[in-house]
Length: 150
Image (tube, rainbow, N blue to C red; front, side):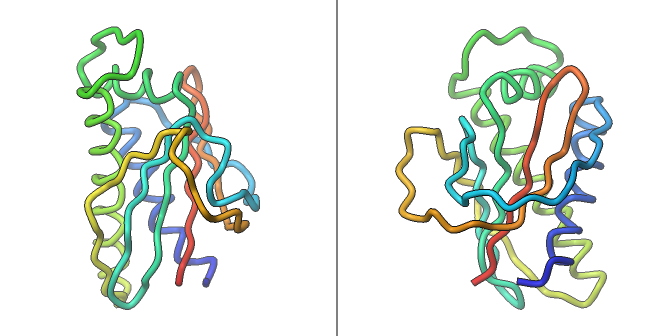
C-alpha cells in the first residue's frame, strides 16, 4: 500500500470532524497497529476501483459517545444505542465519501461500500499490522485512521 493513500482520509476526517463535532483534531504520529486493533468500535468501509481494500476508523466507547452526542445537538448519551451507533457509522460514511472526492480530484477513482460498525467483541481473523494515524481531539479522545489495501 502506498502511504499517501491514507492522506485524503486524514484530510477529510479533520474537515468533517471539525464541521460536525465542532472540535479541531490534531494529527498524531504515524504508527503500526494491529488491523483488529484495541478499539471498542471500528467503522469499516470497503474500497473498490483503482484502490481496493478497507479503511477503518477506530475509537473507544467514550470518544464515540462524545462524538455522537455532538452530532445529535449535544443530547447527553450514557451508553451506545442504535441511534448513536448510526450516527458514528454515518460519520465514517461522510469522511470516506469526502475522501473519495479528494482522490477523484487527484485522478484516482475509488468507490466505497456502506459502513460496517464493528464492536470490540466482533471477531477478526486478521492480526496484520497496518498504517495508522491517530487524530487527537481535545476533550473527546483519539480517533484512529487505519488503511489496508489489497
